[in-house]
Length: 605
Image (cartoon, rainbow, N blue to C red; front, side, top):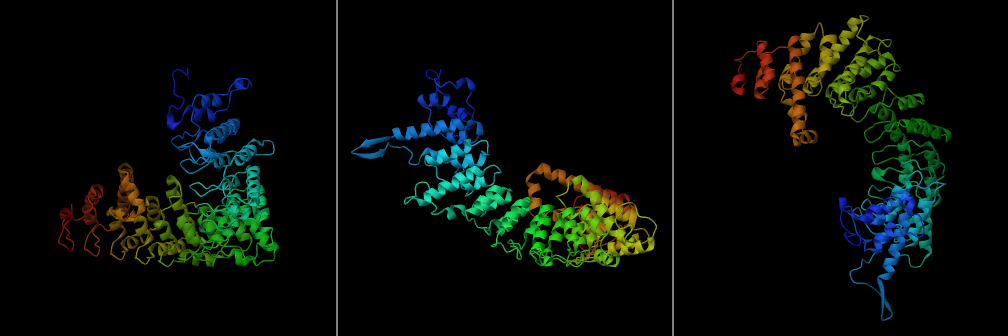
């Protein structure tokens, strides 16, 4: 049928020809008869082009080496490629000349759209183990037929980069290093090996500045790490953001790799390396919740008679210690390990003067918060709960201001209330500080006094936590503060004004504040997709209307005026917020009040 009806190079889906398709499929068992010609060879005899590329720029050989089951296809294609290239060499006047228009570079080193060669592909997609050396053979076969072992793709990755990050890529790593060593010994190594030495080959960096050792450490490839170190790979190679192999091993949490990296006289355990952000491996392990790595690093420092305090209390460029890092991400097991080994909880602050309680409040790290409020002495705990950062924000401000997109949205409101309860309950005494149950009468006067003080505290913008919560539509938090905490002094709390003389009701009624709350990249993103923007905007409107109703129900002054003599109704009308305005009018907001420009709410509407 092929010889009569079809073009063997016909282009199909994704730019693939029949040869592409058959190259990536295992040869059926009924074609195993040695007297029967294989499909690949048959297509080739009928004119199929070995150099034909699909839409991704991949040749048939690229497709064949991507799958373990098709490696026999790859071997057959390599044989055909070499035969094809030999036939394209003609003899003339005793000299070898390439046929006109024939590609100068061998198809063994054909590049796809990402500049990847077949050798990149086999190292990237196919593993080896003790029982199966097929891919090792195909790597060696590619190299023997001219594959360039240090070719780099668009990510600046060599084949060594790709197999170094695979758990079962050890045999491929050894094959590549052996090939590099052989090329180093040759006088003319420019054909298959551009880098001069094995050492230079090992230290080639990808676009993130990672060497093969960096990738092996990050992916927990123990045997590959050993082989690379045996070949004198640099332990202190610096990747992206100055991450060294030991940082990347801490990131993966592979204790065995950490042990291998630290088991060397050149590695100064007493002075662990830092990243561009001044993070030690301990910081990285805490960030990625690698408790085993945290424990091992501490044990290694202790075993080497190193001052453990210097490492546990080492601050990065934002003044975060490993403990503050673990608290930021709510990694409770890391926190426990650090505290058990002497990490300081009470007297450490970040570069914005936030202590561990404020960091937990900002990030809603409730698991860590529950743990540490029980371990801090009561008098010190009160001081820490009331602490303000350099912007004048206490922990309740931090809850009101935070945008915790890392938490699944239905859980955010519940967790905000729980964190607020935990913090305020510290004023009842340590026995009850960890409960999130409704407050009891024990020490009620003290509890209310300190709670009101926290809620009425104004930051550098003269805003209270209630202002901040209204600004960001935190309905559940506002309801909790109004219904459970603010009772006797509710009126005075609702009358507190910010630097523009706005009350919480002004903020809530002026829904247009969300235009400013969502400025920047996040706001532009939702504007691009009008449907998404409408959904977000409608949710915000619902929240603000509910907050306005709550504030009015609990006695907020609907006639309060800001620095422009505007009432909450002026704000709602100026933003064309019909539902908020309707709610205010229903509760007898004056319709004829005039602002500093002589405008009534009707003028602004």
